[in-house]
Structures are given as C-alpha cells and as structure tokens.
Length: 125
Image 1 (cartoon, helix red, strand yellow):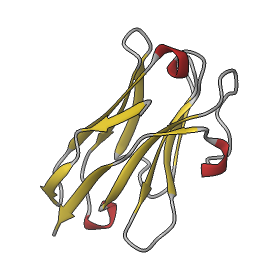
Image 2 (tube, helix red, strand yellow; image 1 turned 180 degrees about the horizontal axis):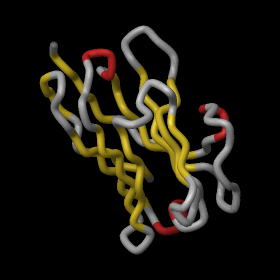
Image 3 (cartoon, one colour; image 1 turned 135 degrees about the horizontal axis):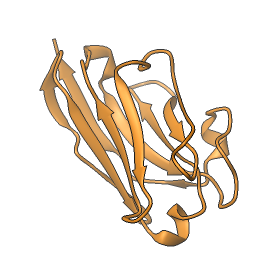
Image 4 (tube, one colour; image 1 turned 90 degrees about the vertical axis):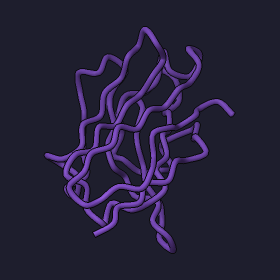
C-alpha cells in the first residue's frame, strides 16, 4: 500500500475531523494530490485537490467553506480538515495522487493514479 489514510471516525453533526494521508516521497514529491469520498451505493465523488506546491486548491461545492486541504511536502503528508460536518458527509474518504509532474486536473477520479484504502467517516444527526 502506497497511500495510507487515517483520522476517520464517528462524530456528530457540527463536529470536526482531520484526515491524514501518508505516502512515499516518490509518489508525493512530484504529484498533485486529492481527496475523494464514496458513500454507500454511490460512485466516487471529488472532494478537494491541491497542486504540488500547495498554492492552488479546488473544492467541490458541497464542501467549500467547510473543508480545507493542505499538504506538508517535508513530511510527505496530505491533510483534510473537515469542519461543521453534516450527515451527508458520511462516506469512505480516499486520498489519491496524480501521476508525477502533472498539476491539478478537473477532479475526475480517472485523473488519479494512486489510491489509498480509505477511512470511514460517519456523521450522526
């Protein structure tokens, strides 16, 4: 496994969680990174993405203003700070990496080459 997510859990609506994704320098160093989620019975949904330097980020409309993606290039770590969580945020969250050398794309899962195993986030009402 080349990407490992952590930080998921069961929280109440309005709470916060911070997801982390650890990976190798080989994957992380030259790659734009993203977070996706998959709710039960649904397809992968784009959440957020960040370019290699961390200076450019994009978000889905459903999380904009509540979630913040960031990266620590010295530690090969990707983060997703999730505030004011809602029951509709319940899903398995995945971190993903684009092929080295590419910037952020349009947010389609097909644009990402490497995937973690996911971490469950459950938000109760």
